[in-house]
Length: 79
Image (cartoon, rainbow, N blue to C red; front, side, top):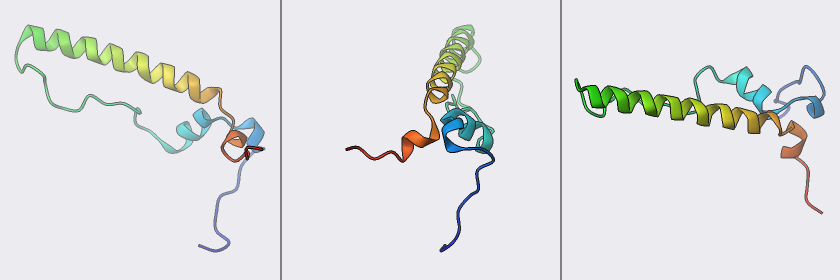
């Protein structure tokens, strides 16, 4: 509401989107869910393992990208 908001512990120019993500989110950005693609099969287990590795790589890439974006970039106006 009016007068509400947040207080930053340090200047916005020193805060990245990765910092924000780490401060408010405990879960990964990507999740496979609980459903097994091929229940009880060796191929299903291999597929799930491959997907988990792929998701971990994508998560790491997204976190690296978030590290490169400062909070100040969100409120800079063009022009």
